Image 1 (cartoon, rainbow, N blue to C red):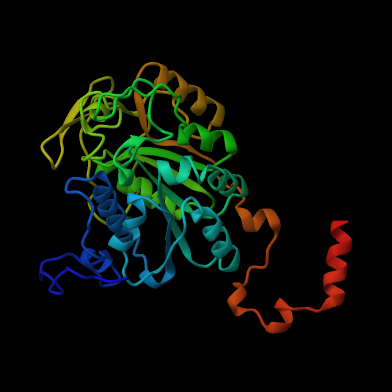
Image 2: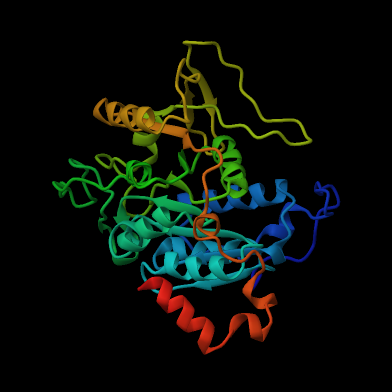
Length: 351
């Protein structure tokens, strides 16, 4: 993808990873989103995650659907493979690509409109099939491209810029993923890079379907008083469920917390984020307990963030269907087209 608008020069002091690449080498084109959009903060976190993971751009596949989120893949990893699908159909494209070549790393970027309305069925089947995909859902509660109508994730009582109140119950992608059997479920906030980056790293290393729901305020249509997806509302109500950290050969970014005491962290934009230490006894490997805790947090008006659930050793789509380990592009013609007799045998097994 094009790097139009970015200067080719590199500052000599920029850190390089073990591949000899700087963060700039993982950046794509300049963003055309609204200044201050939460999606751009997510892009920066994705860039940092891939840089820290020593990812080779040519081994990455990035996919998207329709909406403001669909632009995001153009803003990172210009040397990778990419596919921008029609509205809501990104999971199908991802399923086909992953079925054909398991040796690549796949990341899909979608949003609440693309995933929870027209693409809801696609998302559900991708989760239940266990495709090996990191699914980043940029969640702002509105249809920003069509000027701010409520999306399927808008909370009851949330107001739009005109003052209209939403009365329909929302679809929560996190509880949806838990109920459908996703093996990695997390939630974060676009303004919390320290939490989001290690979550992305963990999701990209996870084998199977990994959903990260990222609350990403829309500065043009959903960052006003009365919105439940605004920066102010999210900062005031977010609560860390688990500590997200991934060990790398460099100094980690940490804040010092005491049990039972909140700590205030000043964000890059001047805002203040209040963190709470990991709750004693919370087990992110217990699906039922995670679901119950999410429901209780929602009833209390809190937004739980962090790694909410992970299942160790869960089989992905290839393990479930016992597919051939060799990527289809590397198979011979005879292997791909074994003839009519082999097809008849297969059909007999399905009868």
